[in-house]
Amino acid sequence: MESLTKNRQSTETLKALIARAYGADEVPDGDDFATEITEGWFNVAYRIRLTSGREAVLKIAPPADVAVLTREHGMMRNELAAMRLVAAHTSVPVPRIDHVDLTHEVVDADLFFMEFVDADNFGFAAADGRLDAATIAAGNRELGALNREINTVVGPHFGPLEGPGFATWREAFTDAFEATLRDGEAVEIDLGWDPDVIRKVLAAHADALDEVTEPRLIEVDLWTKNSMIRDGRIVAILDHERALYGDPLMEAGLTGLDLAGFDDPTDFMAGFGLGELTPAQRTRRRLYSLYLAVIMTVETRYRGHTDTQVYDFGRAELDRVMAALGHVRV
Image 1 (cartoon, rainbow, N blue to C red):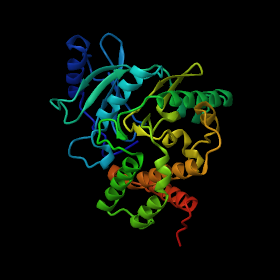
Image 2: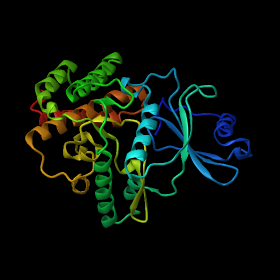
Image 3: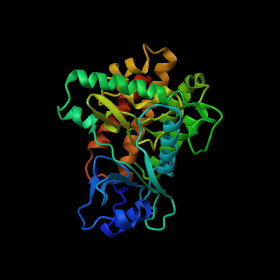
Image 4: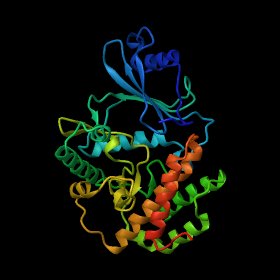
C-alpha cells in the first residue's frame, strides 16, 4: 500500500541500522538484502537477510515531519508495549523483539527489529485461494480464541497503553472519537455528515459505554491479514500498534456485524465465545463501527491517497452505520 507515512530508507542507512542491532558481522554485502513488505498502510517494513542467513523484519515509524492522526502519535511505542504485554501474560504467539531504537540518531523516527516468521499471511493466503474453506473457518475460530485470551489482560486505566489514561471507558472512547473528528475538520474532509451530527449520535448512545467497567487489553486491529498461518495453525499475530485498554467488543473480528465490506464474523465469534449480543452490546458495537468508518474516511487525506477507493468505501460504511443508529442522510 502507498502512503505518505512510509519512511523508506537508503541501503546504506539500512546497513547502519543492522550494525546497531546485530553487530558489524551481520551487515550484508551488496544491496539485495532488503525487501520492502508492501501490504501495510502506515509504517514501512523491510524483510532483512543478515550475513549469517538469519532473517529479520525492520519496522520504521513515519517521518517526524509527516502529519498523522492524533491517535497515531507514538504508535510504535504503543505497539512495543502491546507485544511485551501479550508475550508476558498470554500464550498468544507474537514475534520476538530483537532490538529497539528510539534515539532517532540514524533515522528521524522510532524503529525496531523483530524476528521474521516463516509462514503465510492468513488473509492474503485465503484471498488468493491457497487455503480451503475448512482451514479458513478453523483459522478464524483460532483467531477468535487467541483474541479472547489477549482480552484476559486487565489494564490500570482505559485508553492507550502508554496513556493518556481515563477512569471510564465512556471518557476514553469519546476522547478518541472526538480527536478523529477534529483531525477531519483540520483537513476539511467531507464525511457526508456534519461532524456535529455525528457527535450528537455518539452522545445519544453513550450510556451503553458505561456497561464497560474493567479495562481489558484489546488489539483493535487483529484480523486475518494481521496474522500468520502455517500448517493450518496461527503462528503469529502482527501489528499491535492500535492496542489499548477498553471493551473487547471493539475487536476487529466483529466488524462484519455492521460493515458490509468485512469478513463474516461467525467463525471468529465462535472462537471468541460470543453469542447473540444484548441491545446495549449491539449499540456499543455500532458505535465502534461508526468510529472505524470515520477513521477510514479521514485518514485518506493524511495518507495522500491518489484515488478515492478507500474514501468512497469509508463514506458508504459511515452511511450504513448511521442508518443502523437511526439516522438516514437526506
